[in-house]
Structure formats: C-alpha cells, structure tokens
Image (tube, rainbow, N blue to C red; front, side, top):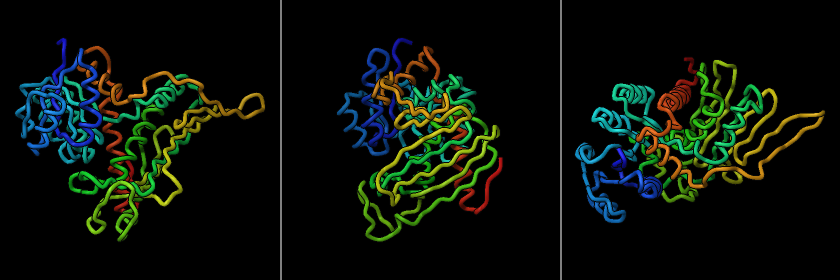
Length: 345
C-alpha cells in the first residue's frame, strides 16, 4: 500500500480543527477519501471545504472507500464504531477517551487483536516536545525510581459550552474523562504503566449548577448540567508509586494550571515547563533545557504516527492496552466517588 485512504467519522470541531488539516499535510502517504456524519449538511460542507470526494450519513457505508477511519464522535459511540471498523478490516484512530467504560475499552482491544489491525487512541499530549523530553529522561533513569506523581489539570471557569460535553449519556463524564484523562495518560506512560491496585476519588457537580455562573467558554444550561466539573483522586500502584490527581473545568483558582511532576529517589521532574530538580555535591539544582527537539505541531505528529503504523513503518506511540488502563482508572474514580469508598483491583 503506497497511500493510506482515510475516512473521518464525525465532522465536529476536533475533526475540522485538528485531524483533517493534519492528515492533509501528509498527502504523499495519506488521502482523505470520505467523511461521515449524521448531519448530512454538515458532512457535505466539510467535504466541500477540504475537497473530500465521498460523503455518507451512515459510517458503515464508507468502509469500502477507505483503509482506515478516524473516529471523532461523542464517547458513547467510540466502542460500537471502532469494533465495526476493525471487523471490516480497517485500521482505527479513535479520539480520547478510548470508551465510556473499561468493559467497552476491553472489547475494542480484543477486536483489534482479532483483526490484526492498528487501533490508536488520541492521547496527543504524548507527542508534545516536553513529554518526549520527559520520557527520554525517564528511560535514562535520570531521577531514579518514581515515587510520587502529582497532576493538576485545572481550568478557571471554562466549561465547554459547545457540542455535547455536558451530556452524561453521550460522554460518560465531564472534566475527568474529557481533560484530566490527557495528563493521567501521560503520567502513566512516563512511569512505565504500572498496574493500579487501589483508587480513591471524589467527583464534584456543584460549581456549574449555580445560576448565573461566569463561564469563559460559551454558555450552557446549569439546570441540566449533569457531569463532573471538578475531580480529585489518589491512586496506588503495584510498584508502590502513588499518584495524586486534580482536574477541573471550572475551578475557583487564580488562573488555569497544567502541572505534572514526578518525584523520584534520585531527583524530580516537572513536565510543563520541562525541568529536572536534583541534589548533588551537597547542593540543590534546578535544571531546565535551553532547547527541546521536536515539532510544535503535535496534531501532525500524531497523524503521521498513525499513518506510518498503518503502513507498517513504525509502532504506535499510544498502544490500546495503555489507553485501556486509563479507562479502567477513570471508571474506578467515578465508582469510588459514587460509593464513597476506595476501589481495589
């Protein structure tokens, strides 16, 4: 196969703003041949905008025209479409999160194994320059054995006021499954994906249910807001690493904050911005890199990795087994919050 034929399923903002432009830049190896959306008019507009030849309202109808699909639908449909595409002999790129539940994610993973096709999940933070630098340092054992991981993925009054982000039936959750999942995935990847043994979490649904709440990202109905807008969690792993996670769409904080730090036995690391902290010669050092290699366009890198993997030229950076683990932990956090007790695996 010299050129990979790709179909886009769901033509909302993530498709038109990131994935379609990225794959169009890979014209030597990729051709977008079809789009599908239940909104025919929107699909036709997208096809005309990007000069894509085929338009469908039923995603199955595009399968004969493509070698791979990119799934950009609400989370509820990720598993159904992924499994159908894999069983039809197609490679699949599915936007994050992998699925609504661990059980769905497991079925997707099993379908990929049966089909022998590639299944990629859109955890694009791994493609950022800071993340690549951090992974290299971890592989070089720069900070020694990881001990404690801290994550803060906080937005100040920025609930997405578009799409279906606040619809629990279609999305499965809110700030955790939409935003916190990115830094959770990145943290797990950096520390080598140890197995979780116990999860304790609390999901809040208070801030965004207040009338006349200030919101910087559009408007939403506070009376029908039904997902989490602030979540905290404590996770223990089988190698004695512990992880503290806080994520929010609507935190009452001074400003947005995106922080991932790892404390190890020899030193520590912070990813955004990237720096390494360590003791040496009786002194304490804070070391930052004057230059980080890599491209700024992580969407393009992600698209290229998927295309090259489908063409048999490289391995997927995000493996389905790793994405499944993220779904398993997120499900446990929600369950812990509902039951007001920790979840043990």
